[in-house]
Image: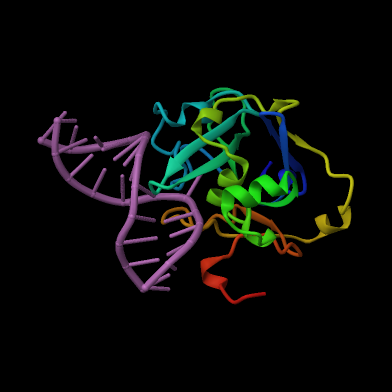
Length: 186
DNA sequence: TATTGGATCGCC
DNA sequence: GCGATCCAATAG
């Protein structure tokens, strides 16, 4: 599922403004078998939507500074979600620039905290079905050839569960978040 | 009720 | 390389 979301276009409309970005980087998080998952220790008030219906957003706040956007992937009763780690800005770029305080396209949404800031997504947007016009994933009918080059690797920023290569990203994209370990500029 | 640590980012 | 800074989870 994390794999399938790569290349889709995240569409988010609010206050009459449409923001769009092509998904270039995701990570999968499971349930009880995945020590890196919020759902590892069972259901809690925060993570309860991870156990709910697929296609619902799960937004949480972390490090005192940042929101992260996930999409629930499993059927009701099974925990599982995909973290959207990075998108390539496609629409509503002016607003993203304003919110991020930079003109650099590569720095607008190339990271889970950055993209939620650019899109204005907060935990008020958690638990919403991502199946309607204002908040959903659309097919991208351009740039299909990029999809041939999806890389995988360990997830970023976690201490447990590093052995699972549940991170997916477009190899060719300049909009993938910087991997701390591979922090040489490309 | 108190304590602790985190699926990050940006500046030092 | 590290501090910011809030919330959720756990323990008491």
